Image (tube, rainbow, N blue to C red):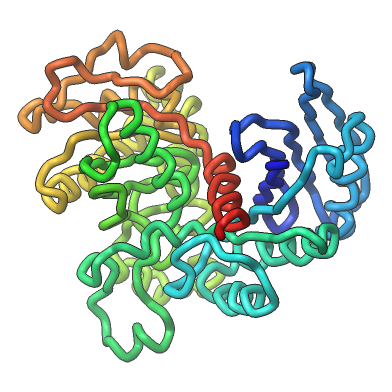
Length: 401
């Protein structure tokens, strides 16, 4: 038996996948949303042994995460294959903020739960929701191990000069103000799969991984280890994102505070009304591109700022790494928008980067090279699979001697 239930919880939703840890086959997946609202919804997909898929979608009332897990178990039973029959051996939980303490996947007990709650001050939008799902899942499956896989863990190999902010050291220490980085699970699995694509050991590669989705981050990976990343204390720092600003002069925030904004207003502005949405009026890259193609100057500027910010980090990481063997695009935008990849790599020929236009336009889903054969730096598109990586790391924990 090697089935791992992977759980990714938000404050009002639970996403889940049942994955065979040995084969990485998806046995089932689902989404429970609008938790705590008058009308919720569950969507469940299950793959039978013969390969046939069943799908169920229902409107239900989901008072809390515990009720959500009960609804998930019922959905498995209705699909004709209960979760018990699937051979469940562990539950792997995505947890956003692990602080400096959690540097690897960790077996969950009461102490770990308490620490995740304590770290909620650094991730108030994420850790409380992650913890609610952990408590509900441990209640639903009390006899199997539960493992926390932290977004921040992969970045704990960064050196002090990369993770330290130049503020009063005592203040930073007291309040945990340092760069933690996020999307670590994605950067880790993508770097490893990029190495497989190139047929070289990840331990001998220097890579710059660009995770470009609604949330976006860059990571400098040296020998399979994160040495720098664009997200910081929170997921706000770094690249332009769907609704998040990325880098901004802290003095600008002080200026807005003096102008009458309060902390809650600044939080909403930077997290929900900035990025592509703030610049163009839309957070969807497809809509922004279409508007730009029809002459919308706001959309054109948004695309230019988006690419400029990525290129700035790309240049910085080329210097930090002393060159690179590969630039790797992943996540929703990185995998599916050729124009963004072309804009980011434009003018980098002097670094040895040469994009093959036909390869770049390919809609192939597998990991692939989009640079020319003679490009000194390989440029790759590698689909991310955080759920499979969480299952893999969970399996390693529960099968360790």
